[in-house]
Amino acid sequence: MTIIKKLKEHIVLIEKKIEDIKALIDKNPDDFSLMLEFETYNNQLKDLNNQLYQENLKREKEIVELRLKGEKARFGSIPLRVVGGITNHFAQSIFNISKYLEYGNKGGKKREAIINDTIDLRLEGIGTGSTIFYLSGRTTPDLFGYSILQEALKKTFDTFNSENADEIIECVENIGAKSAKSISHFLSELSKDELEVDISWKSPEGDMQLWKGENEKIVSLHQTLTTIKISDPVDSNFKGELITISSKGRFEILLDDDTSIHGHFSNDLLERMKEFHIGDSCKGVVSKSTIYNPITHKEKYQYDLKKICYSD
Image (tube, one colour):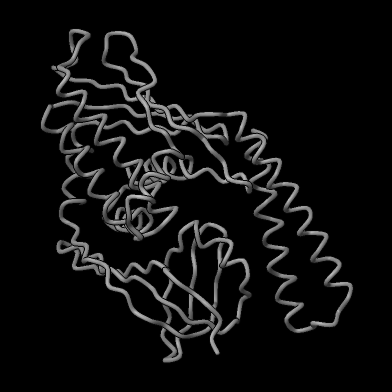
């Protein structure tokens, strides 16, 4: 088990203890021992986050290998046009997922420039025969040890390794519509050029993430992604009670009409979300999209939290 994996597991446990103590403090606000315990665990969490930050700094960059296979790659070389299309669409997928994780559906050239500077995607090198390409990006952890690029790569492999339409829809919800379209374009480029691909990345936890993109898998995943219909996001106001907050960017709110919404909040809202407690009355704005699979007739709503504040 790597140091980073141990740290992340410990952080999850400490965060759970902090949430449990928060709930007890809400019921017993004058309990000094609870407040002392809360501060102790908070200090432990800060120390663990700092250790994670230092360990991720040591990684410096993430390296992804794309190994192309097929007739056009048989003789150890490949047309430059093909290489450009495939690597560009793959890089665009990683960029769009990173942007969604950091900012949700919020747009703007300034945010795009920040993501570009943060992950700094590059062609790191070319392997034997000019059919193996190494792409790199900066790990760039924040002060809590969180790396946008690492999370984007994990979600990329989750999407590639989805086994059915329901799992793919779940992944689309986690990466956003633009990211799903970029992955679809990447798969289309592979299919058009009659190429297969092995994509691999050694995660900070020490696991080798791998997707063997054989022709059947490429076609199947591409068809599902192009079949799924995603509506344009529409903003709406909400008011209710906060039921769930997760450091992994998930939330659930029980609305005043007794229905609930649950979805994603971006990393730029994390510090704001830490100010809230379970059970707090809140209001704000969510961006809502509908994800629909016309083959299975299954429909799912995607909620992206844009603004939140305490309710009067």
